[in-house]
Length: 165
Image (cartoon, rainbow, N blue to C red; front, side):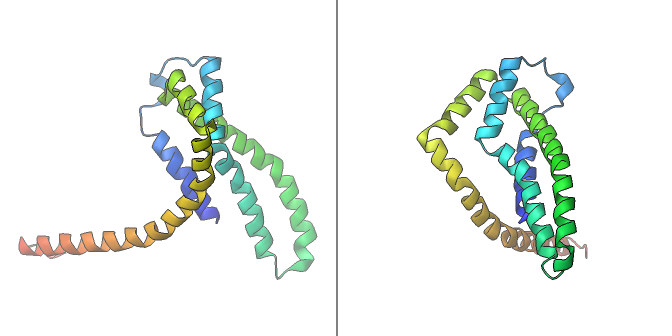
């Protein structure tokens, strides 16, 4: 469960980070950052970031299922960690906001926000998580199978050229 959220968050951030570094872009206006944060929030990026602690907490509780004597201490430790996790999540949401703002114009971000606030955008957002879960279920074995197929074909072609790998 944590792995899927991390994969989603990493995938989303990787898509956003595929352009030049921050230092090459002009300064961002407060209104540009505001609409970028709105996009980060309305598209679910913020929720994916903040959900990581919830999934960690559930996993930690699951680990303690056979250790009921440790539950009280675990609850205390998790409660103490929550503000730290929230601070880190807020920092990452701010980073995501800056990344989106640097990649897209303010006008484009306003259009994206409008789409995600529209009925079809809300339906898309509601179904996206389920669709991504379904996609990851079929994508993982496909990646393994395709990689193996390509490696086998590569080896065959290299053997034809006199190279044994």
